[in-house]
Image (cartoon, rainbow, N blue to C red; front, top):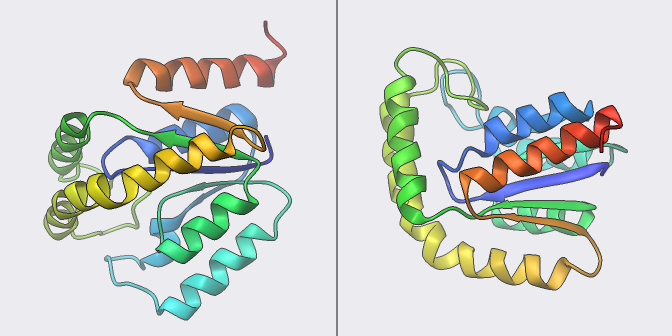
Length: 177
């Protein structure tokens, strides 16, 4: 596990998972929302984002959390040696978007740039939920099925599966059973 792509629908806890995995493994973490958006939530020029993304992919080790755009996501998936797909029930994603919205008034959500517009970003998350579920989820599921033979694939379908995955990674990094 040297190049890890974490992906899935919005509100699935990917950024928290990514941070915890980085803590457990010592791999450098790159949150695409912090690369794609400036402090305050303004989007960087697309060419600037693509250049930064390309630079990260050339590194020997990384954990990348986030989507970015379709071409960069699929490029990242092809370069990664480990795919971590967070595929929770749609209702869980929706509930966790709501929880992030409420807690976002007290602290910047994990993986978000400082001073991100919490209301606008949450509204966008609700809009993306169904689009991702109908358009990307089927493609993501095909990707993980097709990648099992060539990559280390983790298809996490529940909060419990996320915790088991993190526990196994922590045990591996400490030399545990």
